[in-house]
Picture 1 (cartoon, rainbow, N blue to C red):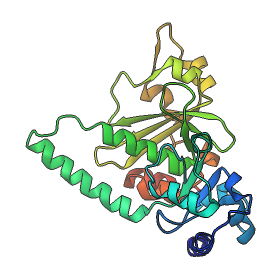
Picture 2 (picture 1 turned 90 degrees about the vertical axis):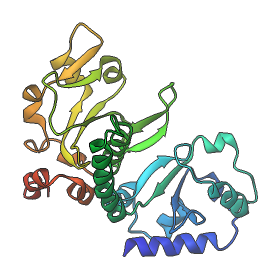
Picture 3 (picture 1 turned 135 degrees about the vertical axis):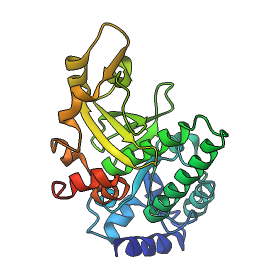
Length: 274
């Protein structure tokens, strides 16, 4: 398996120092089987020619994140040990890490979380748990569409970008049905992005549908005088993944989409998502 081969290369690279090499100049590293093993992407591509691009890794479930976004305490020490130099803040700001999440463990956990949420709601302990669904929905978008999550140059925290450096606004709607008002999008955020992805997450934390729209299209078709745009189901029905194939080419990891889709969505996608 590609994963096993990659882990062997990461272990091999991490097993010796590389202070005389130029691999410290790489800005993308791939995590091995644990937080103490990494390999520069350029070295990995030399060792495994079948990995001709980041897209190949993403199609196998790897996720790209800015180093600033991840909480990996071991990487700093690994970097210093490998290259005999400290990881400077200037270098750190530009680093990206490709890592492979255990999708089965995440899927199993999602089911447990749903059950736990329901118990807490039934006993009136939890009244609003949107923070977790939003982060989970963003992660779904990230792994399905191969988005890079990098440090924002503005005050937004982290931006999502495609491999071609196109900016993506990810909006998560957590409910079993959409409000008649529709999903609310800030006009300013649509203006700052190339694409808008709306992840419709069911109460059981599975994906009930997806919208992938050009921001220019949203601004042209649904623009209003205010600062907010509402995407009502009836107005965008023809663009849902459950009905339209238009943006299937944007899907990098089809396995992840089918794994985390609700049974209803999975059935609608099964024969069309090739």
